Image 1 (cartoon, rainbow, N blue to C red):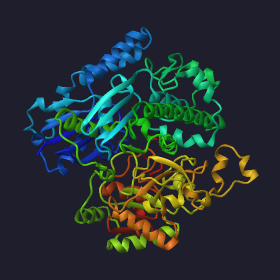
Image 2: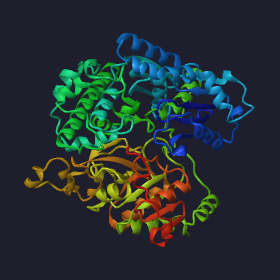
Image 3: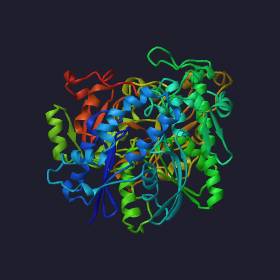
Image 4: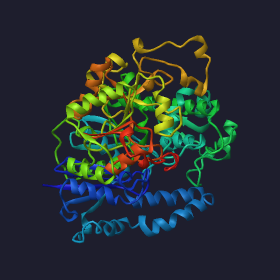
Length: 611
């Protein structure tokens, strides 16, 4: 037996992964345990969890791999400062103490932290370092079902690289091309996230959701002024407009002057049509760059399979366009595409790339991304009793029948089943579910349960065998990373009056027979549900289909805005009692809000920061 612990930490989305003889045993983000969104700290709780799932003490682990190389990152910090000096001294001076205290000599720092898990851990030479984009590429290729693939990674920045191309063949992964900092598609998108007043490394998906409300009026201005994009998709940013290389903000005055508007203050300024047009424009630019890159890669290497990772790979609208353009026969996207997935990639890269272990099982190795903790009935019952919850225990078949009927009657359900998902998407393990046929459900979920902006779209879960009857898609999308349109025969055409609406006013127009998951451009971010990976969720959808004729449910993450997805029984119960959720289902235990002690109701609306 050969075990490898992968760790990512110290920027955002810290995580840990444990693999045994190449098989992924467990993976989880630290935020789920610490309850701090995008927690960047050493993943103490996540490491404890993956070790317990593998029934190992740390000293029994054979190799420990950190997802990037701190000396290379420090080199980039120094060279960037020297290149831009004297500008950037403030950000440079602020970052130096933590680098000198913790990050530069990270092997010793990690060793000291690791000893907290096991006093018998005494071999510092077990600690190894991967490279950031190799970790991303490995997380995309090695768990994929492909024997051979081109692997594209796009994110903010690792050590130096921001975009990389690799070729994967069996257990080999060769890094072929790179684009280096400060030229970064991820940081460009984050700059616009910042400019619109959303939180960087958190609000990018809000920017993507806002884009369909606007028009890409500024696309040409962005392409002409902010960056130089070549026909092959390679690009350079005009750093005259950006501040992230040297300052404490993403953009500067030149950026604001270019668009003739200051950075939006989210606490004072409402979102306007201008902001929606900006969102639409940067989304269009991002899609154009990604399509140019992928078309060029397909033409140059003649390989039929594409793997994607890095934070930009979470842009499911762009992913859907790659698929629709038939650039590749097959696409596979790492569900934990951001830095959390680096812990997985680091472990797999060491196993296949460094130890030269073979790869001979060419199917999706992610187990549906259900790689986190699950709980026994005994533990659940004990915790619910401590929390003074009033519950009934049913069989799995009864649960499916009861919940499907309640959903069909417009009830909202907190659905807590099996192992927690790895990555940012809830996939039927830690989900809030609702009826997609309801015209008011999107607004209801956003304002009364998620406590977030009304424009935010919701995703559908659909039985895999029914996806092509409801959406313009006939492809596996188990990780909710592909966007496609609702089927034409399910759409409702807009009236001439509706077409004249702009901005958030578009939200109130019913666009399909499943309006709660139909975005303003008739699109949806689709999760296909497969009996092999989540039989209980599959059965619920099947039961809902029997009652309603609709094999689709609204599926959003089980949390409120600014809160990490729930992990424990306590998290689930507290969120249930702090929101307008009607029902909570934890494995085979079912709780109805109107049966609970009303003194236990909490105010969750202001518990977490805006995301």
